[in-house]
Image 1 (tube, rainbow, N blue to C red):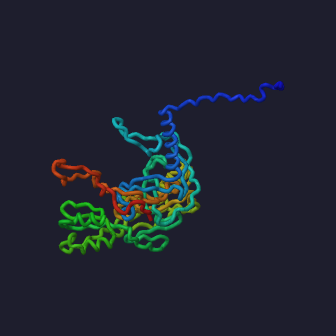
Image 2: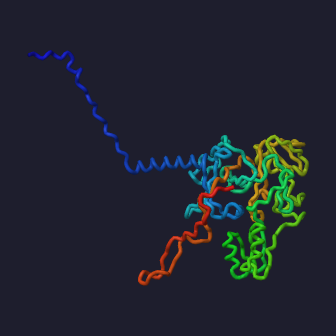
Image 3: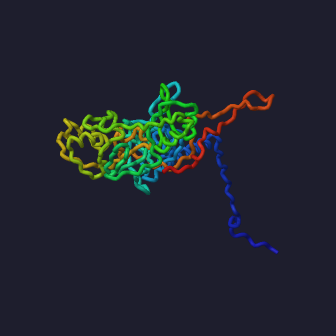
Length: 398
């Protein structure tokens, strides 16, 4: 039996191409690639979504304590596009280099116009807000971060009468979070312990006594505490007198006898607000118009309490931006809008979402104990978990 000839001898033959061997990445290049991907993701999250901050002072003590580790939601009001694009990633304003001192981490010349992307909510009265400190001379995004409570919005009129906040003629309810300064003339044994236990910030006064910041209710309780007030003395509420000018209070002008407890009335400009440029208004709003309204240097002049733009006296001015009034919850221990003025909308960073955890600033990370069995050693060092404040893990901020 004969085998039929194959008409196309190559037809039924499968040619399997030889696989090219993949070049193996070195462990170093893999690490570098992973690092840059992680860095890029961290930058995107920081710029557009969430940013972490540590509270450095007790100006918001009623709500935020020194040592709180907070997260700020930038999506709430809408994130801002980056302004200083040429800078060391994940740094802000400056950094200390051992042996070389402190240096800026960005280039002034490399700036882009910044815009706010859409958010899912607008700023509301009572929001706890992080913003860039307006008086700073850095670019907006590099200005120092402040955290305060927004108590009045663009278009509102704000006033403080004998420590009482009034917005649009309505008294604002006295919150249990609002603290005031009290003085106590004597120091009794165990007084510090009582203040510490109640979480009240205080200072010991030379010559005896305490200066502390608390609610009126807390101060009343202290006066009933025999360990704190053995002689029945009561803490004295410290308040400023009406018509006694504080030269550090906005607008720092002799024409206004305002102080931290008697302030205003002050109209907060809203985009489109037309303000007559009488002498009083020129004093109040000249800094906003010169610095935050987008007018080039040299166009705006102030002469004998008159506003001049391009050399022409302005009888009225139409504001181009929204502004906000910020106060600290610790009213007698906060540098806020009473001192340096209003916050422009483009300075708003985001809303404080929650406290991740909180650290007591004066408590050491490690503790020692001599209560050990004989033969092990005299002392043992162990972590001091009291460094962390209880009940402040994943705490919502309101």
